[in-house]
Amino acid sequence: MTALTDQSDYKTVSFSETTITELMIPSYSNFGGKIHGGILLSLMDKVAYVCAAKHAGNYCVTASIDTVDFLQPVEVGELVSLMASVNYVGNTSLVVGIRVISENIKNNSVKHTNTSYFTMVAKDDSNKPAKVPGLILEHREQVRRFIEARRRKEIKQSYVKEVEQIKMPDNYEHCIQMLTGERCLVAG
Image 1: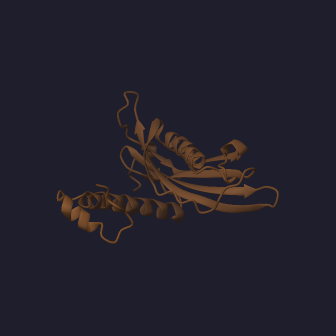
Image 2 (image 1 turned 120 degrees about the vertical axis):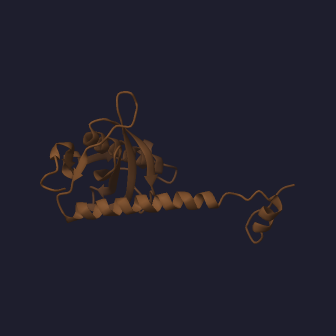
Image 3 (image 1 turned 120 degrees about the horizontal axis):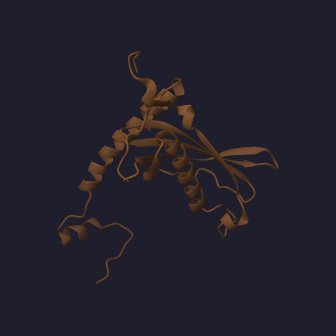
């Protein structure tokens, strides 16, 4: 951003940074006593929405989620904190980075359980995509996150093109041959 750029349509990353902390209760757990991944995904979606909506000044919807790796289990009784920030903005979309940590308050241990990136799209009152404010990057870490988000976007576009190429060939016999050595049986 140059000195001549109108900054009125830009917001800092810190403007919309959001943290949600929630106690993990028994009803959130699976049969193994660990917190369901779906509970964590729902909380991640919530914090992504709040962060994106604050930046956009509009309603936002989840367009995609880039990988959710469950790095550590979350236990009943732990406090889960989800920290979200806008890492990248396009014209109508935003990439929200989310870091999830879990804290055991009895033994003062903290563990990183998830990192994910949610692409959100801003919507206007007519439910049409709405332009989002630009992003003011205030330090090196924010610059790094912006560039990495842009690179992930480029890789995702390339991946979509590659996925188109893996669709099943029209020749059924060729498909059957491709299954040789795989752990499957074709009935009939």
